[in-house]
Length: 147
Image (cartoon, rainbow, N blue to C red):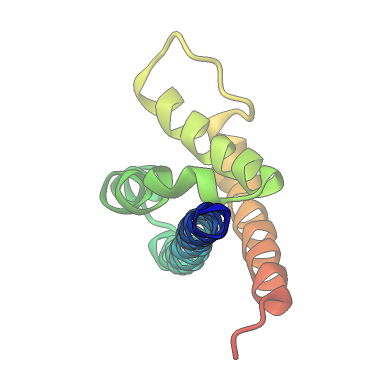
């Protein structure tokens, strides 16, 4: 009878241990899948940002009506592709993106004070900002292992 009880306890502990290991394995696998999904989404976000920067250069030239072209760019591409992926970008990139958004908002809100006066922004800072963003994104691409 003692052997039967010991056998039952060992059998039950084996089932409990097996179930616990299965649960922990499943939990680890879910975490890995979440990390994979985040990494894929992050790469897509940076690719969208790189595409946006390229579009921004195209919208800038020729510089006939820079302000209206900038407004069109922001409406069509920034809020759809960049703002929605904001959480994926690093702090330095987010700071540069904020400058674009602030300047855009200042075009429509006379109560807002731009960080850089609008004329100066379009004349001196816009292309500089795009170049900095482009370089930051390319540096991030260089660090990725895309095998």
